[in-house]
Image 1 (tube, one colour):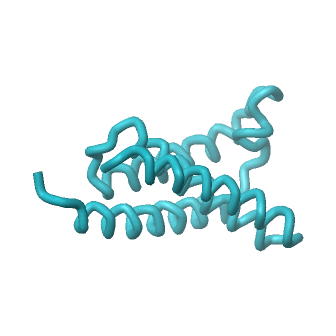
Image 2 (cartoon, helix red, strand yellow; image 1 turned 45 degrees about the vertical axis):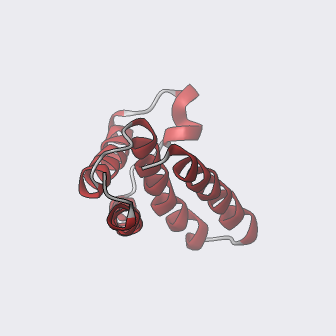
Image 3 (spheres, helix red, strand yellow; image 1 turned 90 degrees about the vertical axis):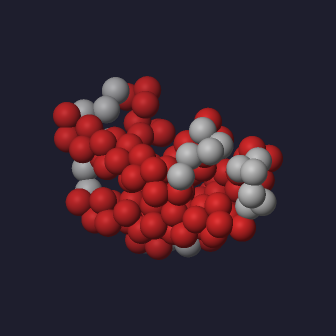
Length: 117
């Protein structure tokens, strides 16, 4: 998979996350942000490994998101809290899975439509 569209998708994902936070209050931006966080991790995996299969990237992104969430139970260093969060919240795990599923669906569609060879 070409890195340019993946990089653009990553940039759009960051913009969507910031836009959701700017436009709404309450649980909408929080849980949309959780899903988009996992989508971004998925896209970063694809940037590093362009030939990765969609299901591998999805499991990797969900696994990393879950690992970061569970690491919050032990405490995240203050310098990393803006990026990794600080408080364990069980519903986040569901939204990470939703983000991974959405990223998988988009990636699988792009993977199937790529030219052979």
